[in-house]
Length: 432
Image (spheres, rainbow, N blue to C red):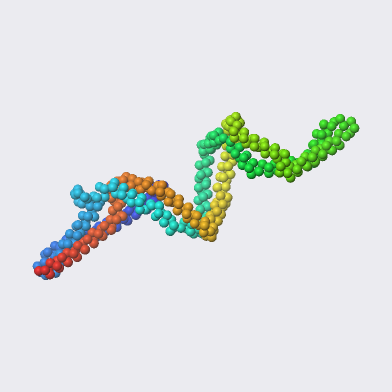
């Protein structure tokens, strides 16, 4: 609709209509002049008929030409209006039958132009995959696509950066957090992790981290000091620090040794303990209504807290600023990614027949589904548009588009009628 209101579009349409009006006027003038010429020729032939038999043939030609011209003028005029303004029955056919014509045209297009088979056949002949690859083969087209993607993203980002959009997003997130059954979904997630033994891998990483930390000198010094405080009674014999270091080393060695056993033994008691505790937690999360209610209440309290709003707004603003900063750069990361993806798609469409077939099939199926879904609406829309036209506008538009051909019908009718008149006169002359 924006294009139809564009001044350049309107100016171009006016120029096209003026050109069509000129051609129609010229064709109508030629047809009318032939009718007048036939009339003049008939009068002249009647005046000189007694001088030579050939004038009889000329008069017969002119008389039949006038009849043909008038008959075709009446037929052509009757399509669009009443001839000479006289409301003769079965004239002004198009304006009188506008509603029926609109329904018929809408139904015709719906049936014969928007069938799934025809659309699919046209798409197969069009070969979208080949056209896409061909279009993307020009670097300027790739840059054009990337630039349009960047402009579209910038526009969408400007919409998202509005305060009311941010508030709506925060409200939707809060409502979603409140409606979600966090306990049940948490139990399902833990069940998946348990089934895939991911928790045991996590346990191994935790043990590695703790073991590495215990092996660090500062940690051992800290442990020695803590043990020395507990062995303060040895201070009297100056053995508290030595005893602390000894006990700390033994403790670290014992813990490290046990960690190694856990890593090496899949059925270590600690692993079974973790399995059992997680199984129990999963059952509670999925079946303990009290726990589920407490979890829901905690999430709702978190979502309603002012800190949640401040944190969300800060994250939103940071995201918008980061995206704005990228989208407004000539060397935007988004632009580069779109261009790179377009080039990869082009190359793959050229060498991968399965991908090309998938693209063609997807476009064909999507178009067929759309046609099946909206075919009736499209036909009804066309019919409604025609019904909504003013009678004079519809008549003028139709006449401007087919009127020149109809005026040639008048011209041909004049000439063919004249020839038939000559043949009839010749037959009559031979029978005398």
